[in-house]
Length: 102
Figure (cartoon, rainbow, N blue to C red):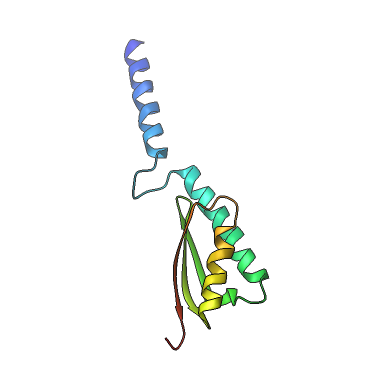
C-alpha cells in the first residue's frame, strides 16, 4: 500500500513537470494563451484598412508577439506594431516586418 502511494506521487509529480514550460518551451496553458493572442492580433490587423493583414505573419511565444512578412511602407510597419501592442495579453512586440523596396 505504501509503495502504491509513493508510485502515485511520483507519477503525479512527473505529470506536473510535463505541464510546466521552460525558457524555450511553453506550458500547455501558455500555448493556449499564445494561440488566443495570435488570433486577436491577426484579427485586428485584418480589420485595419491601412494594414495589409494578409501579408503579415503573427506568432506568439509567452506573450511576445513576432510580426514578420512584407509591408508597403514604414508607416504600415509602425501601424502594425502599434495594433499588435494594444491587443490584450501582449507584453512585447518584435517587429521583423520588411518594407518592400528598402
